[in-house]
Length: 398
Image (cartoon, rainbow, N blue to C red; front, side, top):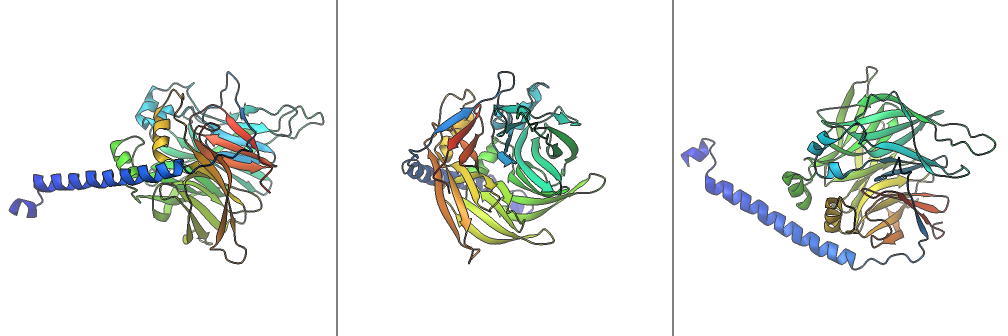
């Protein structure tokens, strides 16, 4: 007892704490197995899913189009061969300058729409591994914010997207170029970033989804015991391009996708493992207050918000299937059941929402569904490891 009071914890106390942690993890895993089994066996894939996979070129494959944006009839996504990231950031040290991610875009108005790599001007690279992406229109200018997993830190890369005007023959793509403006890094705030949504050309919200490096023992403990250790950051970039971040929302179980309403008054955050969409009121001083935690039936990933305010969530129903899928760098199987839902707010009561399933798949159309954007009668579906982006006819969405 004297040693314990002096700060030395007895071995029996350490063993007891360790045993308790193991028991907690075991119970959590058992619960997840049951929930995921139920989810897997209650999924009914849509029959009306005329889907096509759009691949990149042989010299520029479209690996892992995880997050999707549709702007002015152009589909944009960040791509990367993410097998290294799944195994831990230390694996990035073996990458060469050629093993880098890219931004791809497809002009739907072109005579022959196809994905092309968007040139990046002024980027100090070559360390570019995009994850979440966010778009901002401010006056006549268009900005693209990108989560970049560098070798030693996470950054938000900010570009101005300069689109081209199409010629009369409709043979020229409007994809244009990305001009790098600045890199936003806050070593005190940025840990393991996932997604980003800009609210001005020098400010944004971003989700810190993990407190530990991917695939590390502590990360597995954090995930499978549903620890609310993570948060949403609000960050500002000053005139000297220095970044300062503050926590805008805390105590979240794996915050993943993030987006904002067209009027920028409502912020949406997916709390993946909690199977909730967190709806926040955004105030003039950029603070957030939780309006409602909306229960959903799956682990939602990315969020797309249309011009009329509809919210599309895409994600997975079986977390253990996700884990198996992510460990399979051969990409040969281990499909993950997933779905897309559309959420609409009640115009009379902003705390109430309707939910409608608009796409469901057992994992054979999209191996692991991570993002969905609806545009002109079609759903554009993203994934984390596979090559190519899936496009499905969606005449049922009105």
